[in-house]
Length: 434
Ligand code: ZN
Image (tube, rainbow, N blue to C red; front, side):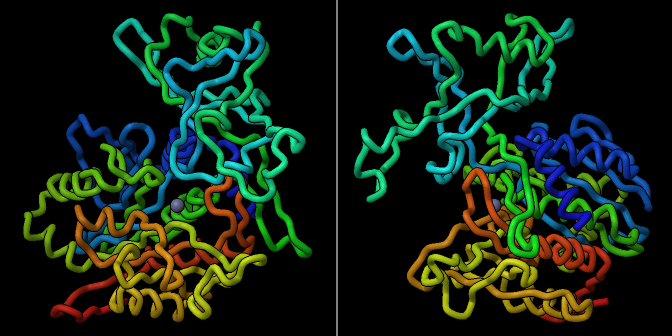
């Protein structure tokens, strides 16, 4: 249960991808990992851990072994669906209300955003004597509400209602006196003058605190379980695993998975390949060493999965369906939206069976299109054996999601076993696993 408490505390202090990556970076720093900068020369030595961030919202950490003959990579994502505040941030309604002007970030469930306290957090770029500096801010109080339309004014709402992102989802910020107050509030929170705020990336977040529910406390209910649960479990495993003698342990937490990963810091960028290549250059290795290492490398792409819904079990495949608390989910898809194949599944099955860690298998209904995730996207830049895993959860992309309390330990255990394994390759399709 300690891990559940720590996970919920991590999620609570990580209202945006910037905060999540900032918190991961400080835990890596406390662990002794050294910060690298993409703009500086890298000098690396065996036995040490390092990390590098990009855009303050993606991070890659790695530990250098004596023999860098392969990579064990865990990837997860730092972002969650939310509403981003537009540059001209305020809207006036009939001269009496002040709303914030927001647009969708990612594909979320709209309904659970209504009638609950919301706040604003993110990054602001402020003028300094020498140029521009980024600061993370969190207004950190009950600030906004998106009010529902009363049933009396929308009698058909319970028969199905199509929400419009421009007309239905604007949060109420205050009365007419709140006009021009948002920029001021942002500047105050950043501790700078209003004119010194030159840019921003600000998002809404729900004020709900993560909690434990169920007859025996078997479920956790929290914002952003997708995918901070996997990102945080990966961090625990990275920090807790024994330092490897062979093979590089690497943790990647990418931003922008919810909007297709196609940014300079997303999984569909060169970030991962850039880091791997630079790492081999810094270690004085040849290009051939790099390609030999990639042939023996494995990646776990970790992103949560859909548990069987208690009200709608028919939404899932009859047999390849997963339940909360029943262990790590291994995801399959014939069209390779999930990267798992016979080889990567066999490798992971062996690892988990040897350690006695429970696992289960997920495939979409054959008549339903599922979502893709990080594995197949990053695979187009760094092509290695990959499998897609996650933890079973309900209400994915709601601002408050439900998952299994016992699964946190299952994931940390499976990821730790992965970091403590070693793979070498023989011929194509022949793996020596230690
Ligand atoms: Zn996800």
